[in-house]
Image (cartoon, rainbow, N blue to C red):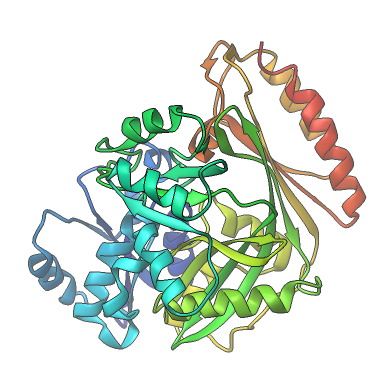
Length: 416
């Protein structure tokens, strides 16, 4: 029997956990590499070590790890989630240089401050942004950019899932307190925030363009639109996300912008998750994840379009081509995220789930809490996913909207 090929997944958490099944279906063994001896708490539930042929833990010696992996003769090295992007890049450059992204731009694919600089240097219009550890530089920058009476955003440069994102007003002296509270502390991926990003607060409609690239050729697997809500200073709370058809009026413009960003960041291979704001002044980059869309999104995208960026990645590296450069929306789909606006206790869970499952467009529900659990106000996507979400799918978009409203009413019975 011929020896099976091997794929390496670095930090196979979140949506990256689905690579094991997808590669195994393609007759490829999957080996996990962990950037630390255990998964970050926010990803721990998604990690299934029993699914991997072998597991390596990175302990600080890149050459030592590369030497061990080289013996497996892997066909690809892919980041499973945000925390795996840097190490996957480094290993790929050493072992599979013909399948690697631009090594000279490795930092800009992970550090959101350097990322925006690289995109701006490529002549692409971006949001106004500064990355620094110096509070006085922030104050001066706000005046210089004409933002000294405006809202702006503070966030870490190396986190994920809207962790520690705050909306503040420059005229409010409290922004310094928030800045200090985030600086030099570890974020939810366990990374020290030695700098912080301050970015103008943008008004508009937020889109996500999910892509898969190979040999510098880019493809779009889906475009979704986000609707978010605010809770005090927390602006990164998700209300819902809806899949959009590839014939929307803005498609070509989003495609051109997304591809130019990928080129600016040197992304030639693999998936990327690009968040873009459509403002009155045009498209503006929010940030890019050089990995697949998280939260299990590729599984739902398979239902919506019959394909996903994760499956395209597997098909490319196992030489199953051609790969479509766009997608067809087969069914309307929406993810409705549970939101807790104030502290409370979970109640009526079984009754709530029963009502949700009776909705005409119901497809899937994920609830991560149980009756009697205390819950805090939702402030980021990690907290949202700790509560749960509902996936709706239906041929009629009007049914999705109707059921979305029903979920918001049902949700009021869930937290007391």
